[in-house]
Image 1 (cartoon, rainbow, N blue to C red):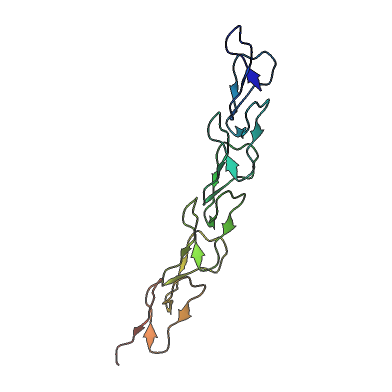
Image 2 (cartoon, one colour; image 1 turned 90 degrees about the vertical axis):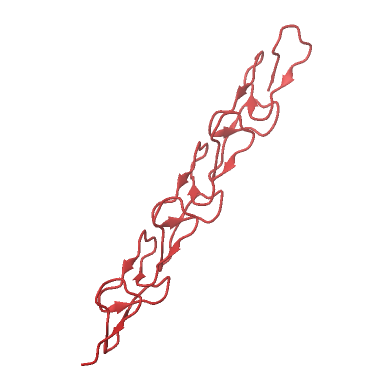
Length: 171
């Protein structure tokens, strides 16, 4: 945990946080490796970052929390993984992501919030990466829907993905 950089010193110097000296007689301190950290001075070793945290460079005295939308389950991680399509994570320092609830979706990796299905679209699945359009003859006026409704008698929805039905013309 200490070193003497020059010959003839009467005292050794403690290694700074983020560095270590494992052997007696070292002339330099070694930086903690990527994925590792050491918060105390005069250390003889570094430890791996805990799950949910990472160390992207050498010589760090603290690990960095995975940001929202990212996670890691590994000890000693050098980076965090993005949440997959259909998943999200709203907190930092996470070890897992959760699936979007029905009526919501995650269209890309690394999202911290899910997106509501827009009017005319729905999903019943947990962990959806997209919403399905309402079928022809059906509609959905609201957002975050898990189902579509049929048009009433005297109304129609000619195409898919409509948020409202159209009244039939007289005659």
